[in-house]
Length: 175
Image (cartoon, rainbow, N blue to C red):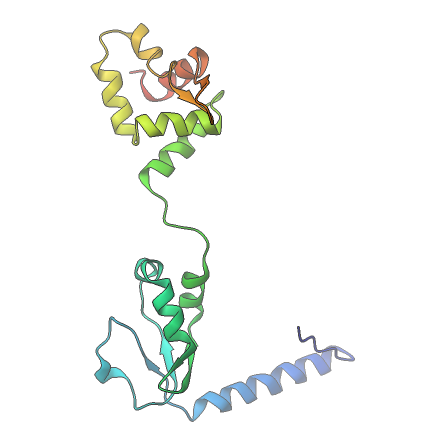
């Protein structure tokens, strides 16, 4: 790790100004062009420096390995990446699915733990499917107990229970 220690505030400003000037002059003379599956090769300028840019995050997430391989070197030239693309490639989060969002909503219900919420979303992956299941039950007593017998845990010994089932019904099923 590189840390530049300066004597005072003025030296810090001078150092940052010098570094900015050096970096700007280093890239000013080179043509930066796009290299991306979204753009035809005719947009690439010779074999100068390349910038991977313009890729939507979804496409980057689908084929991160290929993008990383292309980032190292192209035609013997070093590849430079925009900050947006760098963030998209190196993010550890995946796109949130409807099931994930529904699980998070269930976790907001008092008395519902992570394992119980996951158990509910295994049987009813969307809020719509749960509401439809509530509508298919003939009366409120059965609706309130719809989720009570769902098992969860490593050996599926634990159940969601009557209290959590009723709480979920009050939030998602009560009309």
